[in-house]
Length: 102
Picture 1 (cartoon, rainbow, N blue to C red):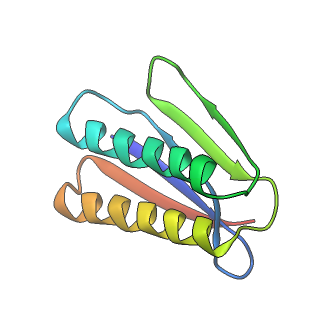
Picture 2 (tube, rainbow, N blue to C red):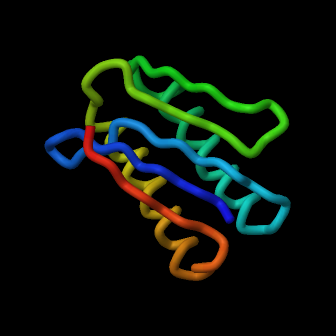
């Protein structure tokens, strides 16, 4: 099962996430592409600073903003969250999403 942890600030805005336990199913491939595209898009299209750590063999990625997020980054993170929740709706036994406030 894919485990996704979404981190929000006190205002409810996403500021980071961790996704782990990817397998080799189509759902895992979709989640991997969604998460990697989000990180790559934030890096390319925004000026926000962040840290990102991942396992090169797959199965683990963690992302955290280093500063306040811009509107562009907010849209990208919200779109990723929408994709994850849509995947959970379609495949409830393959993905778990938890959220925390930091």
